[in-house]
Image (cartoon, rainbow, N blue to C red; front, side, top):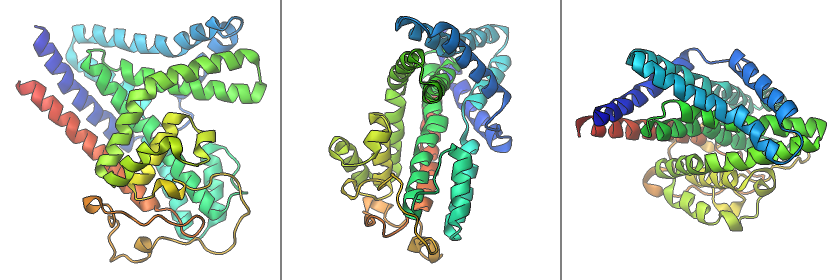
Length: 358
């Protein structure tokens, strides 16, 4: 009886993802939705009441904030499987829907890209500040575009590819939506407690934050490499792999701003759209003097007859732009993300069909 149940789990995984992603496209959640507020209150309560005192208390706070919701999602899933698989399917869709957030950052990114293409840098900076709540008016237009690219790559991994990877991996073990919930809550706890420490500077917050960041690196280790591999496969494979290998030797500000796994992902994504590692990957990210004049748009944007896919076919290299001379290829990154998502969908469907007929 175990084999048919495993096959059914794979089938449910595919359709749960399909339904959840379609629902998220049709009805995206707002950034401050009710689920987010509940998660915020739980993280704050655990930090204030359980994350103080000894360093071991940080793990207690993390368990309540992250592991408990994931365990609850799994137990409810198993109970609903006993009651009837349609209920379990609905629960899967709901948990994945609440965990992903592609539209929460894809719409701001699209608006920023339009503003940059139109040369409206003031509007682009305003949109970036609203999206990430970070000061960007001191950035040059080139550094502004690079920052948008970085946030895009990291958010598309954390809120889409990483959640899907965790959901699929845990579903293969029969754990239902526990992986998606665990991944999302772990990411949220690390970010929430980082913000609390920056605001309050409490020692207890530092201990809990260290725990959350360590756990996040463990949980994110495999998903971030799956995302990087998919970018390399659907993009400029040779350059992406070359950047991956040279991550430790790259001279980039990303190492100071992001953790090693995020730095690796940024380097691979840069290589996938043809930016070599020796050109500084995404380029400088520190504030610099604002520049006047309209934003330069890549030639593939200016000439509609020129293919956006130039440089991606058959592993051909795109010339690495000189620092500060040309805007990074925002359009290529968008295409890279959609190709990666299509690749994941095809692989999950293939695995589902293989397990169903075997």
